[in-house]
Length: 294
Ligand SMILES: O=C(O)CCC(=O)C(=O)O
Image 1 (cartoon, rainbow, N blue to C red):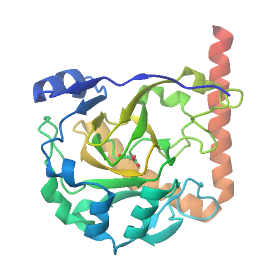
Image 2 (image 1 turned 180 degrees about the vertical axis):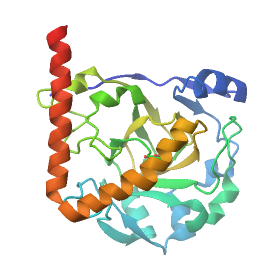
Image 3 (image 1 turned 120 degrees about the horizontal axis):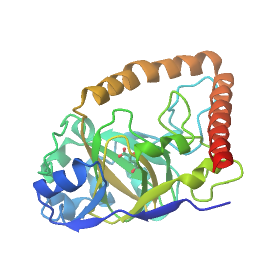
Image 4 (image 1 turned 120 degrees about the vertical axis):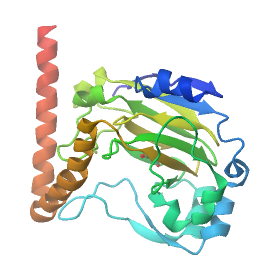
């Protein structure tokens, strides 16, 4: 067993649009911004009690960390629950049940009055302000967002730890082909370096987030998240502007994902095993070659 190396993501306060663009957006470096949300009504209002009052009767799909195997699509809910019961669970007990990509516009439009799109020079896609919920101890598998958006991730109610890896570390992350996540058998908190030696090359960037903190995650950054308490976050997104990234976005959404779902539904476990063995063999072979040369 080993430990993934990490260093701290820089923390700033009251950053101007020009500073943000020059020091973080243009070089595509993450940053944690404190204090940016303190003037928003959300800063005082948004907690799990408020969510219960607002939308407690909604029945919501919940997901756990068990990989979806066999002839099923890649993302299938583990159960459904009334939002008020789920929020109560988050307040009172550890759970690995998470909810993700909950679109505020469709599901809780009242929340739109409580925040502003930050003036950071990003061109936000305002159709998709989405929320994520997690229980104490729940973990979000290492992945990157297939739309390659620049993300502004804001946390509420409690604490979470976010670890990022820049896109140039993809070769050492054991990315499963035709997906945006790595091998689900890898435990990023206690990685098995005998089985997955390339993980030793990773150099992550980490931030502990508290209520109201804002994290900038540049396009294509891998993220791995542990909820230290039950709580929730909102992610605002700005789509890439470069033609290369836009082409990749379209191919990920309209070619890669549908292809993967067809292969899963047709070949099930066989397809999954084939891809997983392939990435393991290929990555370990490259790692060995690099070491034999060194
Ligand atoms: O915090 C979470 O639960 C997941 C966040 C995430 O993956 C995202 O914002 O893209």
